[in-house]
Image (cartoon, rainbow, N blue to C red; front, side, top):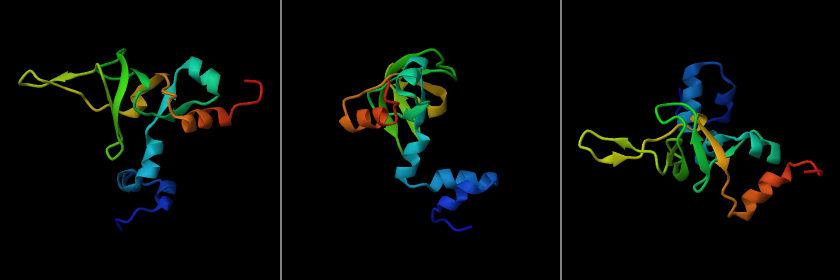
Length: 131
């Protein structure tokens, strides 16, 4: 199979092509893989289920050994499609702390960082006129 990325791989049922689609996708496509579900209040406010996560958003861990912890998004690794949250740390064998990479599907956004006007416009663009 060829290595160059193709958007047509998304339509395939084959698991190997799905993995290949995600692994070789360019960053503008990988950004969509970093979408995180919104809390019920934010979902009602913005009429959207999920938005791409950014640094500064407050998230809650829903699944995994850090379940229930909340913190601010420290950094987003676009290449590996992982999220790092402040306040969540794993302890290494030598006793030092390291931030574990978290999967976007295991998180929920509880508070959005709206410092960027374009992001705020994107969220309000699809709203019905009454909201």
